[in-house]
Image (cartoon, rainbow, N blue to C red):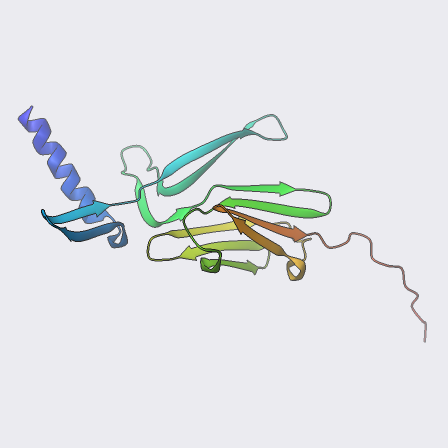
Length: 167
């Protein structure tokens, strides 16, 4: 049992050294120094895709390692995101709780939407591939109760007919 306890203590010391420093906070209490680690978040969502096969999406700041490798831990959390493709628009719904709307940065680069938040207490980051037929100039975003909703209207598929003069 003592050998197991020693191994456990060694693993925790090793884990503390490998943690991103912004996940480790120390503060003084009336009883001495207190060390707080976290938040450490891992989750997944399973839905059935249009082809009938399961779609597994992971979120959080822990990326599971391959066999025998420890998991990778970052200070940025990957939010849980749903992309809903509709006829006239693409709707993106992301869970980013614990921040103010002023802290959320949305950037459209080529066909990627980047969602990022970098505050003292919360960090989120997600890059989403979006179909190229959206119009980022007409995009709208709302944030309410920790849920970010981005509406990207699609460019009109039919262009107005116009005559071309032959010279």
